[in-house]
Image (cartoon, rainbow, N blue to C red; front, side):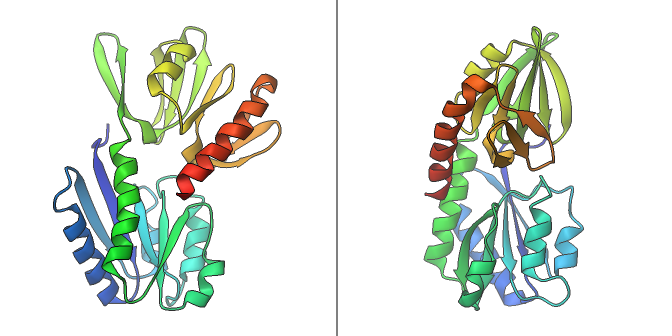
Length: 240
């Protein structure tokens, strides 16, 4: 399994001063935090899009760059499950309306203000710290999953199939027991046979949930009202 409590932060900007500022503020913010963090630099849209296999918890992304610009990078990243959140950094605040997709969590003007970036890092840090480990027992050994790595869980008789960014693993456990273990949002039971992680949901319609990786999962009829209520609660929580 991957390191359970680390935060990967990347900067994609053709301005070297932006990298210096973000790295300096991140070093200051995490200096008294009990977490491992990694910082990565990319100087073009092409560079960051070549890192499709690397987990990026937060990407600071410039809008205006030569070649592939930030808006196009955002559109492509929305189809890459290993990239989780984007904060745009730009001196062109008039472009904010073009810069929001479902992975975008904010916009910072240039020059970057330390108080503003600390607010954004606070939200990320709290989410990572709250991302507890789920422990499953299998054939005499303990399997550990970080909650955010689990995309969805499927019932299979007295077993469950856990789908994560690392693939699928079958474990002897009922879905009911698993639901009690993972303990609420962002996980939501949408069918007698499925639990999904709302962090990986791209769209919810009347009868189906569409995940960011292209998977479509049916919604059970008796779950539809609950899903509507809980998904709204999830969105409000993510916003604030």
